[in-house]
Image 1 (cartoon, rainbow over the protein chains, first blue to last red):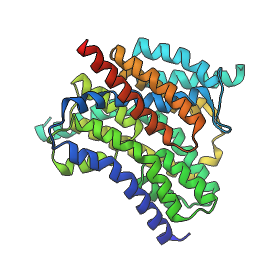
Image 2 (image 1 turned 90 degrees about the horizontal axis):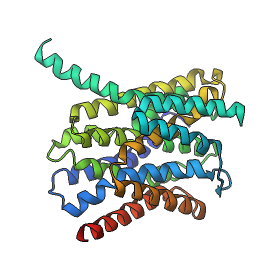
Image 3 (image 1 turned 180 degrees about the horizontal axis):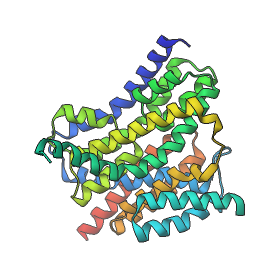
Length: 107
Length: 233
């Protein structure tokens, strides 16, 4: 691929990434939102994060099978406890990395 | 300090304090992306162009894999669209806190909406101690680190051993803590558990990435209905 191919590809990818990020904001920020929508949207962050996280902890990526007791899940337990106690994002990331690194040697 | 300088420096400081954990997570992943791109024969300037024009981690990984498999440009763009549709939900949720703000600001802000910056900004907005300039700084600091990391990876990433320092767990750890920030009552915990169960089932039964949007919408709707029923008593 030459420069122009890459430019075309990335502009296309950029457009289909940018539009879903910007159109709802441009539209909704200038409207009075009904209360039911505000209530529903308040539950979206917890839903998205949980939906992103759960397959990482409970599923095998390659064959798409359920797998309980993955190191990712075992490390998540103390990491979750730490996050609940300290509410520190940076600390949680660093602790999770350290425990996962250790788990690579132990498990 | 002069007032004008203060107005720029304060949001930057606040943004940096919110963005640094995101940056810790992005750096190793950006490095990994750069290394993969270099192995797939993509030049470093193309990696830089991609990180600036697209700025979407999972879509960029998929793009590199598809380029390595010699997929068509149209197929890669379509896949990117599907993978990034979840951002419509995040953009909608952020609109609650950015009501009435000028469209040019929103257009600039929307560029930096990622899974991570979204969750950090939502948490801070909800706590009431956050303004839009700090949120904008958070988004663009994370983006700057992402561009730097991916280009670094493309240039010299082959010297980083795989799996070092548990870097593969950085994003998982971040998701765990961001999730904790969202647990602000019983209905949130219940919705989170529902989302986890639906997402796992969806992931196991259906191919592709539809599980993220599918489980999020299903769980939020169920949670909302439960909440309404309980309010009515």
